[in-house]
Image 1 (tube, rainbow, N blue to C red):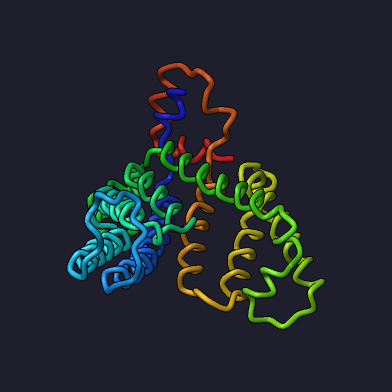
Image 2: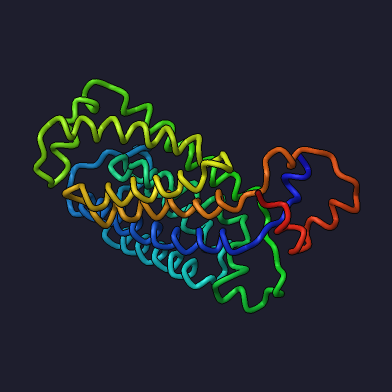
Length: 280
């Protein structure tokens, strides 16, 4: 276990994740602000905790500004740990403010940002990288949590779709703008379930993960292009999910993480060259 906690790896994959999550954060904050703004304007409330004060126009504006500032800081790599933590807290606050802000992609972004806060994601491709030495490495364990979260999402998304209603093809027929015969929507429903189950497993398997990444990109592109509504929100969801793909492609072998190593080998694992050699 100590090997997994001490392991340090190439910072570029998590920097890529940071950039995509900055976009997901901005989109999710805008979406939640629209919901909270309509509640502040008089729409019926569904509070999670009735004792909490309801949304007000000023409170929603503060939430929007704080969330967008955190997203910009993540994008440019400025104070990335604090920005990720702030973004996660802001999204969690929206979830607790009113039940109508809940969505699976909102919760996903909240959790991924919480893990990203510990990932040292500003060591490349940002303002923080200016202070990092050329061979800087980053902790691997927050990346493991991010990857696990995404594959858990794919698994439960697939399991939730294994029901007569979704597999009948009618939901996809209603949601998509394409005018196809019903049997094509039925085939697409089955393909969606199979793809999500494949992603939940294959992203962890070295020989399959490249194929899984291609399948995942195709799945999310199909969702964004094929569904008739919420294109921006679905793009944010795609960015959050695909932010971990490079992490999967570059992850260290799982079988080596829990083997005991001599102290000299443990010390050398932080070196950039050795870190590169631990990759599959």
